[in-house]
Length: 144
View 1 (spheres, rainbow, N blue to C red):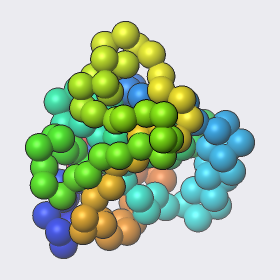
View 2: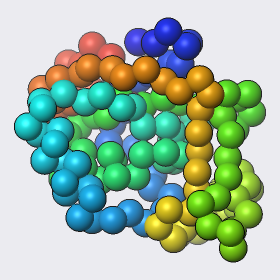
View 3: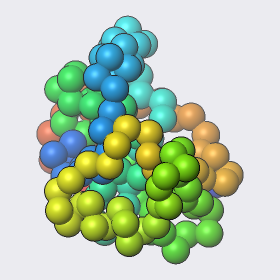
View 4: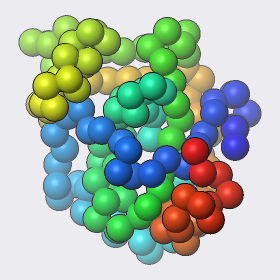
């Protein structure tokens, strides 16, 4: 599945996705309740294409885990993609692909709201029912 800007969106098994920073549990819980009530998923996570770590979407990942989803819609990108820019929310951190890879290798998490991965153009909203996100990969029409 892709959207108007050519972003490749795939449903990825939740267990394959690696978090790279801490998140706010309260925010993740509130987000999970919104998703549950609306019964649709609208914003794909942005994950690194080869290692499957989160670039953007830690709260959405945590919400999906709280809801017991098997799969999550994700945009798979490499750092070399010209549509991707990386910065830090925190002045004490200079965020680079190398630094993030070091944390991933150590299985360590960066502090809350450290990395800022943005896409230009911004992906459009999608609509995937939460029923599709609870299916096994083998029965999911968008499985990676």
